[in-house]
Image (cartoon, rainbow, N blue to C red):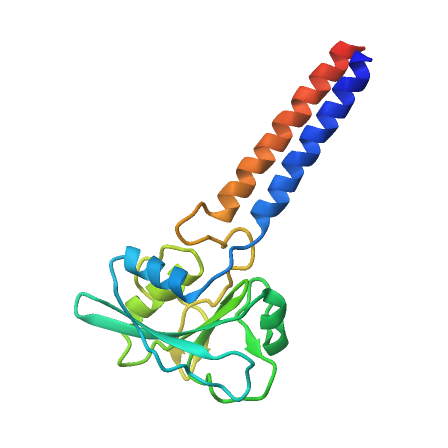
Length: 207
């Protein structure tokens, strides 16, 4: 009987820990308020344009957001979807690469595109945007804290632009104002390992 109880308890705990790990690995969803709060917490003065940016090639409107700091500014466009599935209706989005609109369009020419679970961010590194601030806005969207300067990456029209990446993988995903999903996942996996070790030890004693 003792052995049976040990086996059932160990299995239940391990299953619970693995469920926790799976939930933690899910990328955090993005919305306008969360992104605005993240920009503000980084020391920016943030302005949100009340007029939506409409795109004939998309099923969602964009929101124009300007971040200003130290006399410089950068305007970006955030396009939020209800879910990742809805985003994928409009975009080809693969972990580690920038998104590409499925419909033929020139609406995003000259901009670098980023995606994070349920949203796309369009960023211009040309004037009047300050490139370092534009990069910082992209880093915050991806859940990274950048150095404030564009990184070497994709080239458009001879201008060096940063790597687009994406925030859909656990390594990038951060819920604004919360714990990084990657950190939460790591903690959950540690718990799972500890439970497994404890179960093996108890199992040996039950013999």
